[in-house]
Length: 116
Length: 111
Image: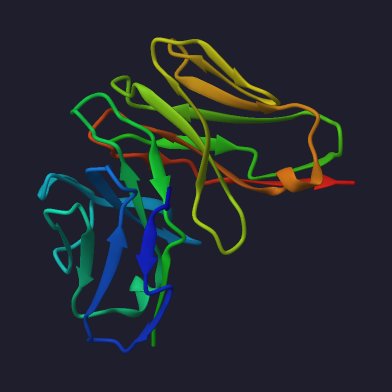
């Protein structure tokens, strides 16, 4: 069974540009979450999608957005890039999350974004 | 909001020794506590998890304990091996797949 696939693995962008990252979850998984990992702030939750709906959102500015498609694949977008957006962006997929009861989350290898 | 503290930040042990990593959480609504191992250049890998209705869980050399009253949980690795060297993260969640992570522990196992 294939794991979580994130593309691209590496990206270099210029300040002010926008970027779109892609995540393909494990087959059959319907929940996709996104995290930002930096040396200073650690792993921080961005948002979670289930059945094409955003159910939960972290404390990030509106420049960070996402969506989920009917096949559960997800994309996240960052507009007007800042130097501080340089990070490893991780996607995690879960079988399903029925509200209060979490199910195991499996992470992809991440997309390394560098903003110059 | 939820806050998770993790200690120690670095841990060096000899091969064969045990390693213990401790975490505390603040949100009493948290009911799910996974542990992840992250190797260089890779995403976090789930190694064990525990739910709030369970006090202890074991999987071969790895065990996790949970004390809901004190709001802390710990990871125990016995008979450590060099391949256990990595960064370990604890996390807590009150649902909806939102994980709040600790700051990580760099474990180094020396042969």
